Length: 196
Image (cartoon, rainbow, N blue to C red; front, side, top):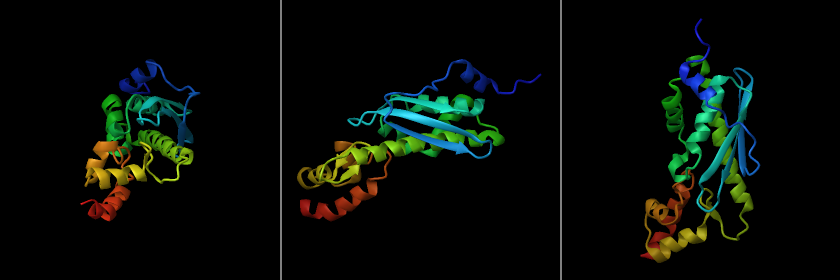
């Protein structure tokens, strides 16, 4: 009799799961698979100072494919900084899971996609919470690294930073999820002329 799960999935299920609730979590996100009525929820612990993920855990009522995918994704982000996560790129996340578990069968791809959606939702929640917690009068431009408009203006006007990349190298702004890069470019377009 052929086993229900491929060996890579069975091995991942046997090694233990990190599907516990994290008391110290400062962000969470979930997603559901309408194909089979399952869900997955990620909780992450991240420090505002450097944006690194000190822990990531999950809960799911899904099948072995979903459990294994969630486990690999939690492992993939644990201990990484926002820079190293490359904006949670779909292709990179999919490749990291497939490198450990092989390609999912077509009727199970939704398990992987649901896990990725939930993980991305957790990081979106983290960014939202950082914005909500920011108490300054100056606009927060980069939520991944808590970089203010004032900091970026200073780098442009007083330190000669003339590209998005140079600003990222100086203060990490724009090097996490990347969503603030157009705003930084707008600031450069408006301010760099004054700096030179």
